[in-house]
Length: 306
Image (cartoon, rainbow, N blue to C red; front, side, top):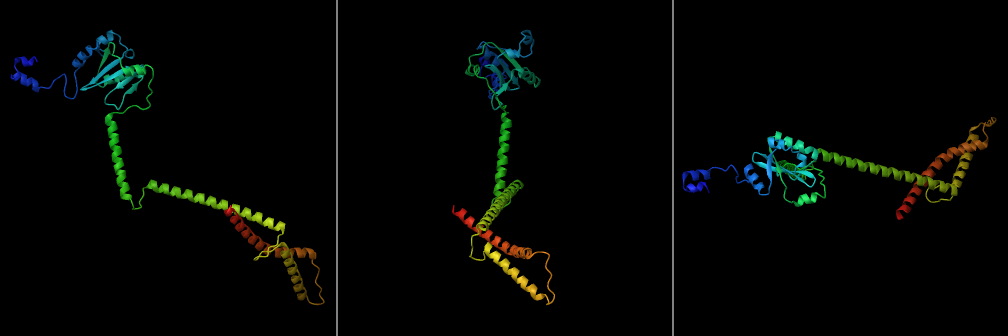
């Protein structure tokens, strides 16, 4: 308005309009003079951090309520809400919790990085967040990230996802798998084979146990079995006796007359037992195998029906 007093068509006025303002711009930036005058409306005053006035007032950061930080054309606030401090930097994805012990170190680090820090003195207006956090304390599990960092991570994830989709499309129907997937398939196949072998061994042990139970039960009960090639204990005894008689006849025919055969050291009963045992081993083995197989089939059929 003052520049226009000399005339809006004057050269000085036109030059003034073309020059950028040092107090604000279209991005929303305001100078410290503008912010200081705006805060005076609320009865608040700005004091430069570690300035002579700051030292004279012996200000302890932990006892204050708010700090305003500026670097070049970026401003953000460090404020106490309730009983906890928060970094309200708009470049972060959310508020960052700052402990009381870390507050002084955080401010000193900002100052070392070139930030201008101002203490806000005076009574701040009432705030709903401040009232709520007076009753409830905040616990922050994960610190917020810079917006640019998060966007870069999201972009990288999208690129990786796109690359993965291209790889899957290229491998679709070609039967080619990456090394990890092949290892996984082999591990699954081996585990299935081990399970199958364990099942087969369990079935085999159960079949042997059932066959042994069925054989002992059939022999003890001495139940006659006439079907097929099954032999009972009575038939086995008769076969042993016939074998013994046949052996005696053959021995008598081979001995010449006048040379009576010498008595064997063992009794006829012992010889009978030895020859009978030789006969019984073959026949009983055949009978045992046959009865075992028949018993296993019968038991499996019974279990299947159950």
